[in-house]
Amino acid sequence: MKNMSFIFKICFFLLVFLFSMEKASAFPPPGASHFVFFKPLYIVNIAANGTGTGTFDKSTSFLLEQGSSVAITATPNADSNFVDWKDCDNYTGNVCNITNISAPRTVTATFNLKTFNVAVNVEGSGSVIPGTSQTVSYGGSANFSATAADGWEFVNWSGDIPTPSNDPSILLTGITRDMNLNLKFIRVGEPTKLIKVIISWEEKTGIKTLPFSSFVYKKD
Figure 1 (tube, rainbow, N blue to C red):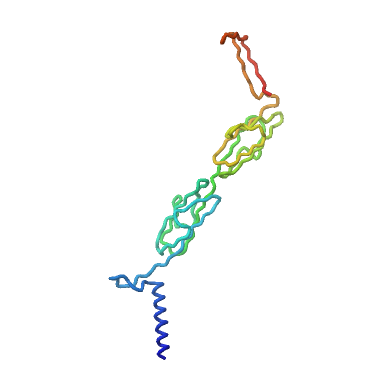
Figure 2 (cartoon, helix red, strand yellow):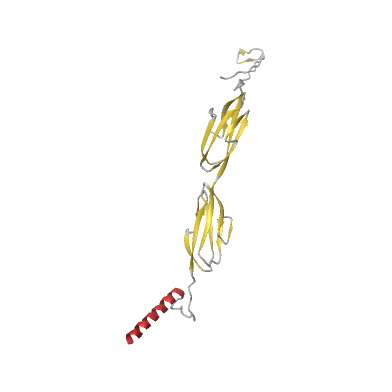
């Protein structure tokens, strides 16, 4: 019987000990007249969404004491823009605020890749596929194909490209800024280059010039 009583006491004190470890400090600090209760800890998870990428000034998973507050800053990478936060108590710009936390929380930041416009300015008469403007994500590509109208012919592409292109189809890759292209058509048989020569009666460098005249020259 004594053994049973002893075992019962041991179990009782063990339960009290475990309970005190979970809910309170078993030994209050000197001068304290009451037990100091521990506050629950809640996990905070940070997630990212969207087509872009970014970083945070906090770990993507951390613990926060009940009633505490925290501010989390999202910073987009060079190829992305920050869009918004979800499930914060409130947010200002790219800063998410969690206030007086009382339950586990997951907040989500959205980043999207930067986008750029590629515009085509058409001179003359003709069409361009898929159109005179394309929206392209950072690092993406744009493809255009030119077709001259009846009685017209394609000349070239120029603008924001290293050198003019004489190919009716053009492919731009690795786009990281807005771009403008020039597409030129001319009427069939129209000179592609005009050279105006003005000749006067004046003598220059010892060579006597011909009488005044002007003409145009078509470059083949």
